[in-house]
Each structure stands twice: as C-alpha cells, then as structure tokens.
Amino acid sequence: MSSLRADAIREKPLQICWEDAFDRYWDTDELQCVEVICCDNCGHMNVVEFGEAECSKCGHEALTAEGPMMNYFYPLPKYIGTAHKLAEEIGAVCLCAVDHPELGMGLALTGGGMDLSWEICAGYVAAGYLPPTHFSNLPVFAQELDEENKLVLFAMKESLEVEANWCKNRLGNFRDTQKAIYGRHQKAVERKRLKAG
Image (tube, rainbow, N blue to C red; front, side, top):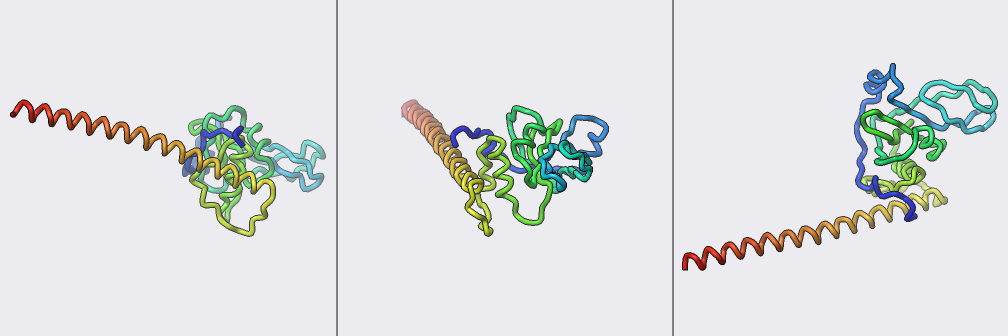
C-alpha cells in the first residue's frame, strides 16, 4: 500500500461544465477524454477516445466513448503519463481519463445516478494514488468485500492516517509558533514595565 502516492489526499472534486469545455477545445487536441470500453461482440477491452470507434480486435463498430457525464473533475496532481495510459490503469469502469489543458490530468464520471464514491476511490487507487479523504464517508451499499473494495478500504484508511499525521505535525508547528509569539509578547510587556518602573 505504501507504493501509492499521497499527492491527492487533500484533493476535492472540481465543478466543471463539460459542455463548455468541449465547445472551447473542440477544434484542438488539447482536451482528451479516454476510456476503456468492452466490445459487446468479442469481449476485447478497447482504449477509446471521445466519440465512436471500432474494436481493435474484431472490427465491431458499436464502441462509443461518451466522455464525462457529470460536471465534476477529480484531479490527479503530478500524474506522469498520458490519458491513454491512465485509461488503461483504471480499466473498464464508470470513469474516463481526462487530460485538461488548464486542470491537468484527472478522472471524470461517465455515468451517475447514485453515490459513486467507491468507484472514484478505486480509480484513484488504480492510478497509483491514495484516495482523497473527501470521499472517506463511503456509502454502505450492498458492497461485496472483494479484493478491489478491500484495497479501497485499506487505501482510505492510509489516506486518513497520513492526513492525521500531517495535521498533528501542523498542530505541533502551530503550538511552537504560538509559544514564540506569547514569549515575545511577555518579554515586551516586561521591558515596558521595567522602563516605567
């Protein structure tokens, strides 16, 4: 688990209007949305950019990558790689890999309708990140305790422990600062008293 990066622990979803983003970048290659789609005909997993494509194995033409559906972007800070590589890492789930010219690399939901925190966290883990603690209140659905869900639970626990340690260190630093400020103030009060006396 320690091989997962802690860069995304404090990330929060960014609200974005995908329709506006596509309008703005439609004629450029700057905005990439890539997802893995399973071919209905042969079962092959295909990495597909936004739009329609055919299966790279059997040529079946019914593959459609619809791209982001919900108006949120889930940042992956300091991600090293392409949107295609990220899509392969997260696999055929309800997420797509997005390389946004202003926001950088991240994830976006390709569907919705319920709380998809488990899937978002699994996407972060598959991409090599500890999931953001923003999603720590994971819903208790009829989740099976399969290997992926166990991994999400362990990763979230580690995210919370890392953040707790960061907060503990920041509290220690704050107490040192507070002590120094009160000490300086006390010395100034003492000097004024001695001068007046």
